[in-house]
Every structure is written in structure tokens, then in C-alpha cells.
Image (cartoon, rainbow, N blue to C red; front, side, top):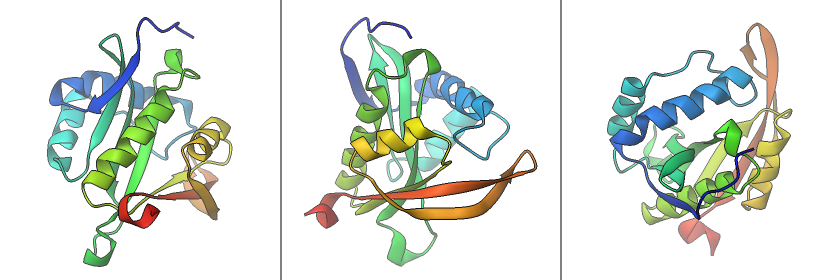
Length: 173
């Protein structure tokens, strides 16, 4: 683990964060503990994705002395009008910067950014083996809703997913 060089801060992601986001996301893909994806996006693909998400689906980054070390982003939960206030999210932390609070900062900042945009709930699916992510989500106030068994295959093996949710904004009152 790399020691912090400054105070960890969060902000909305910009297009020039795409290199760092692609690198960090690629680490998560490579570890096979965070996503069904098996191929990394390159920085240009991440920049295109950020542009497509626009302001409606925010991405936040966490910096240590100007270096992006974590990010969290949200996407559409379901493509129907009655679910527009629910977002499906992911959070990733650079492997050299884990256990320093960056994931919690990213997740809390994403919750705030989504609440400001009218979301009332964030959800995610987490592999049960990903104890660090489950613990992070619990610290951030998410609750375990249940488990999808054999939800999908990763490299030919069935994987279960723990469903987590958190009420934000108006629904959190």
C-alpha cells in the first residue's frame, strides 16, 4: 500500500480522467472479483462512456495529491420511466491505494451527486467473495437485500451476486 501524500478529495470526473479510470477499472477486471467483464476499456472508450453518461449519470473520482486513485460511477438501472430515480453503481479503487478510505469517499460522493440529480436509490450486485466491497458498502450505509444465485458466468463458471441498496435523497428521510 502506498502511504497518502495529501488529503483525499473527491470531485466529478472529467474527460481527462479517462486514463486513470481505465487503468483502475482494468485492475478490477483483471482480479476477477468485481465484474463479469473480462476485457478492459481503453482510455478513449472510457472518455466516450463519460461523455455518453453526461451529467445525468455522474462519475466521481477520488484524488490523492492530484492523482486519481479511485472512482465510482452510476448507470441506468432499468430503461423505464418509473425507475428513473434508481441507479446501478460500481466503485473501484487502485490496488496500491486500498484500505485508505478512498472507496468510502468515492461511494459517499457518488450518493451525494446522485441525490442532487433526483435519484432516490442506488443498487449494485457484488460477488460474495468480494468481502472488501461488501464491507465498504455496509460502512456506506447500504443494506444486503439478498443473493442472486448463478446470476451469470465468468470464464465459464457460475457466479452468485449479493444485491445491495441504499436510499438517498428524498427517500432517505
